[in-house]
Image (cartoon, rainbow, N blue to C red; front, side, top):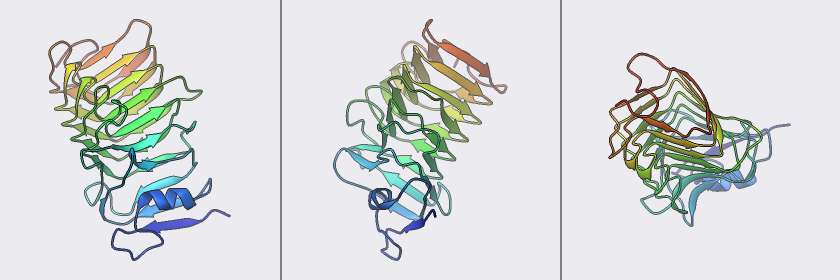
Length: 231
């Protein structure tokens, strides 16, 4: 039988930090995070450790902040996570790419589901908001998320290299990079559905850059920056 765990930074729950709850959880469990600001130590605030769990906030991203304190990546998925690993309802902020990649979220050979998150004010060399790297058997899902004010050298909001993902109902705006302010992808299968890419800035490609070896499906709402350059 699946268990439900609670996290409260005031100490009035099963755990006072998210990592301890993830470590205790088993596949199929639910972790509910109460409003507050959560930080961590080491390379990541939260390492999902391959757990097939629903990690969600109780009150949504405005009330529940996970911060890397400009010292570490916020969320790490590097143990073959699939869309059965769900991260939902957080502001993911002040991440600093621990491995120079993925300030907010770093996925290595993994395909989690990220939904209803505000991913903002993160920094890395590749993928200030999210970096997805390495082959994966599945398609990661990014749903109903806002990427804003993230910075990188490649891919201010998103950098993908040999990863696979869908972005649905997302907003990518006001991100900054030397190369591709919005979304930068290599050798990937990528889907953009009802996703607006706008007002991102850099020296070469404002909106989205897609390498010729990529397979991309694009169904964007009006106002979305086009592939390879519209701002």
